Length: 194
Image (cartoon, rainbow, N blue to C red; front, top):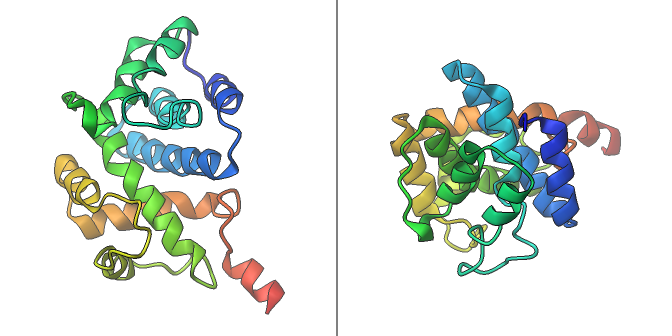
């Protein structure tokens, strides 16, 4: 089966009804897709893998289930093993090697996208003017977006071989064009309500 975005969206929405989880998938897709373009990799494959990385989280919400119990579903649907392995490798608790650039990139973007989204939710203009220094400051506040694993954020940038500020700026830039789809305010919407 050819990994297409449309097919990935169908699989995601079949198993994921939560708007928050769908928005997270879109954010990670945007970041991973932008890195695919930067690295000259297969953007369709990378975007597909990113969209699907948490597709089973609603039906398998615990570490002893997610994402390992989702993998057979992907295989039954005919997804390439590269997609399945990418999805599996984003979960640190499985201890799988992140031995491809796609696996390292998905891991590096996953938690950071969630954290940037949380930062955008508390700002009047979403992520329009969000800077890496603000994100780093929030990372040092354990009570802010407490569900985000800070170690994964730092480890992800290191695994990609990029400075944390550079990685944060890149992911913010990738998410900005879809801010409205992510439920984030934009400068335009802030002006309209102001």
